[in-house]
Amino acid sequence: MSTRSDPHRPSDVDPADYRLVCQFDDHHEDGYAYWLDREMELNEADKFIGHYQGNGYCDVCGTGSRIRYGFIFYHTPSAQTVVVGSECAALLGLSSKDQAEQRKVREAARITAKRDEWLAADADHRLAYDWAKMMVELGQAVPGYRPSDGWRAKFVTGVDRYGYSTEKFVASILRDRERTLERAALDAERKATRCPVIAGDGIEIAGEVLSVKLHESDFGDRIVMTVKDDRGFLVWGSRPAGISSVEVGDRVGLVANVEVSEKDETFGFFKRPRKAAYLDSELSGLSDDEVGEFKRCNGEREGKGLGAEFMHQPETGVVYLSAP
Image 1 (tube, rainbow, N blue to C red):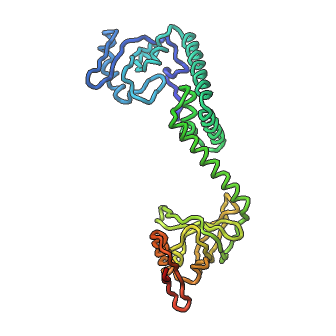
Image 2 (image 1 turned 180 degrees about the vertical axis):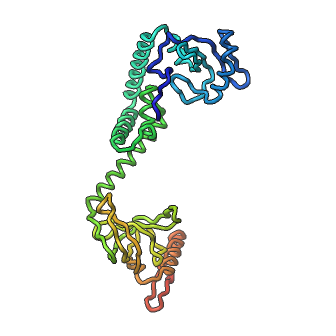
């Protein structure tokens, strides 16, 4: 966000430099504009229409919603007209900059008292506000972070500016807190049980599949999977064609070239996977097509509540459903 340098920014406003020349209602059907200065109306009306139709925002505070009931002030030093809402009109209507500063102090104290009352009224309000503020402050320590881009920052800024927020926004922040803490606890648990990746060419991997997802990129779409090796590290890469029916929870084995992540020594990337196979006892020895059929039929059996079991005949490689 660029820094304002115009003379109408709130920090530099001197009410003595402004004169009210018009008040208006910008309703599209029955609006009006009441000019207090006939000469100003003749000279500035066209300029006002062109300026205001361009954005409709307040020229002083920059409020990001179109003003319906507004005021036009003439700024003597710059010979400019500015369009403002009711709050800024009250500021420009004061007699001096000292009065404006006093008004700002009183308004800030009022908002602070309103915020403190809102925070004390419900423990969830305080919890949500403290959480969002802490996360914003942590984020500001990250290079390139822009707090104005974050919805947590939007929550904190709203409470600080208006003295309250909606219950829906509070609930959303609390859900964010719960999910974030759960992920942090899970990550901590996983890191405590993980060991550095064994990197190199032709590394044998055997472990549980933690995720299978579609990965989209500029080079095309592919199915990828994350495997937790029995030795405690995680590897990620393209799903081998030989185990295309793999699902989360399956145990698989494969040989691949493995590289360690630059950000986490317990996480790696595998390439050129080969010799992929299922390691689960009920799937071991089956072809990929047979595994797919096994899972499809097993899902139908469970869905229909049948009491039969699936069997694999080693001699023929046939998967069949035994009688219930």
